[in-house]
Image 1 (cartoon, rainbow, N blue to C red):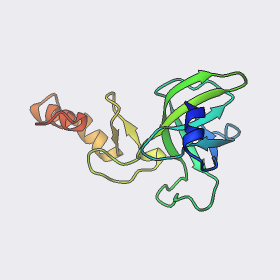
Image 2: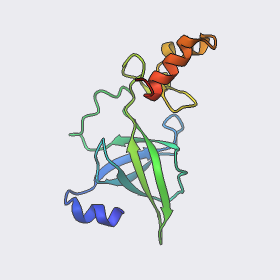
Image 3: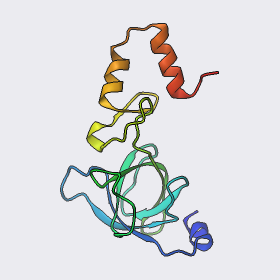
Length: 150
């Protein structure tokens, strides 16, 4: 897949800093991101296996990239798949929009809460929903977050 993306997309790879936890020193690596796009799959080659559905954090090292809306500088991404190649792991990622699914507030990494249904919520919305008893209102909100509303 990465080779196909390289053939189709003639733009040079984007230099990034990659980590599984930006709060830990010494776990950041500089890599190339191929097919960089916020709505489609992007690819990177890493020296470590990254399990599908795990969250990684990307920081663009190119100064012309738009990072101002991310307070801590890191953009979260979800690993789609990861395959062992000869000397590295080819990994596909999808960027996660760090916006509360309930109130649309822009979030930093520390403010982000994930539900068991993989929704992204701010602290306020997370605890409001958590505090609701198993009522029709709580079920309606959960269905709305899943997109199951007619």
